[in-house]
Image (cartoon, rainbow, N blue to C red; front, side, top):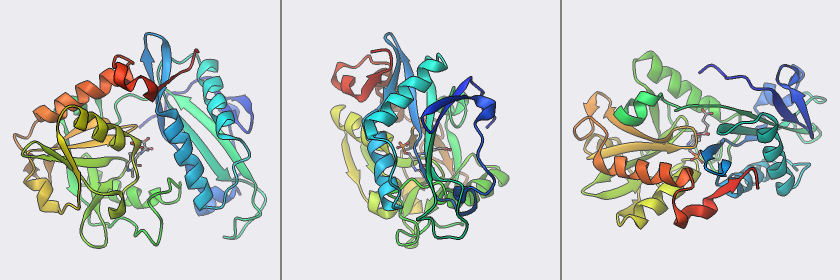
Length: 308
Ligand code: PPE
């Protein structure tokens, strides 16, 4: 997806011009994937740009860094302030926010422990991840022939740059075969998640998603959707799913910061339900998008306003 350029990027404590935000080719992270990152969204509200679940995202960033023995040279509050600064500097009403903490220049070889730790935060306008059309009409997915990296190889609880190469294999396979997105099974054949989204199904009005232990990312949108669905009166369960659970589901949808709530209309050429967005998926989207706009009192503390 082409990037929409804006003015400034925050790099190691300073705002730099978009075109000057460069790193050395011998940066450790480029060679070994030794970085951790977040994907966050700021939404347009009546009170200006508001970041969705800022605290949760920053906590996950720090947990990811801890797992890889990266001591982030800023406090969680300082990273939050930097996000505010870079959104304001670019005068954005709504945007995607990508903080990356990475091993920089100065050491070669796999051992990262002496390599410096650098941080940048980029923001840019990013529309619907799988296309505007997809939010209404859904996407087609393929159960990938590539397995999700096993938990004891690359722990899925950390959002590390290097582990995305697993999703890259699956995504390429799906797209080249004519599908919109991939879903990966774990070593035991249970559903994990998409290349960049968590997955849910609806069966007999019960909403189900795989447990985190299956090997999916502990998605922040996933948690919000579980809360919203329960508040709407639906039973929500976390249980292992196999591929036929998707074929036989009444409804299926993805969740993610970038993907928001995207319906799945077809799995491996089998239409899910009617092969269109299901009614419960639509209801959840409505509640989700209302909350992101700051219209739902109950979820008011899920937003951090950038102009306050
Ligand atoms: N699983 C994976 C593998 C994943 O990458 C994401 C986020 C999720 C689930 C959903 O997590 P959450 O955003 O906390 O609800 N993927 C990010 C990166 C996408 C990209 O292409 O880059 C995102 O949505 O920001």
